[in-house]
Image 1: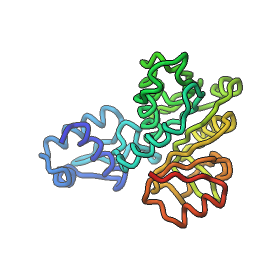
Image 2: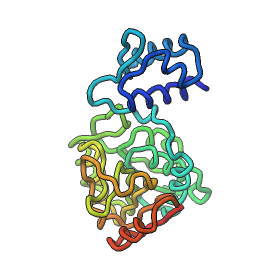
Image 3: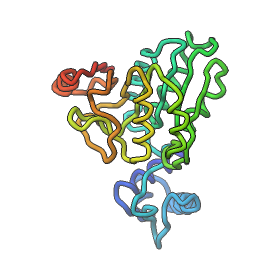
Length: 259
């Protein structure tokens, strides 16, 4: 197991349990206690956890796992979803991308589309996600627009009122949302209210809204509302979505694409 994979696993276990001791973690990951001690020390230096005698605890009461350390849960589903979402974007369009693991995969899927290899621009990408802008900035055929704002280290997203100045001056053909939850009654939602506010602005500036979400997020609720289900034009999810769930979204006027 690589160091990065080991760190991902350790942090996932820590978030789930709140506390880990060295021997327990070593047994879980089938590595030596010395390796786990070294990992804990290095993660503590990055303020990813707090070292205790014989183990570690989560860093603070509102601990959230940063994007780069999230285990790729539902990875194959997200890649299929991303490819399908990318296929719904036409050359020359202005596309808004929120932050998140699924939308990052959408950005990557757009980057490898052969019909978007040239153009002036082939796409205009508007995003508040620093990692997405960083990945796409090397594509000269893409025009990259970053919103203003203050960076959240957990998600690499820019948030806050500084983004209003940019988003208030543009229009988008399509906004692609990564969400924590999407429910017919409660709508699309994020865990953080500042992220939800930026995502809401992107939706308001777009002609159409696509939600990219694996089926584990459907029928769920989260703290901060982004928009109603009726504001979503298309939901792209995986084939594990239930027939009843599809029916409920379609009755709300949402086109459902399961891949």
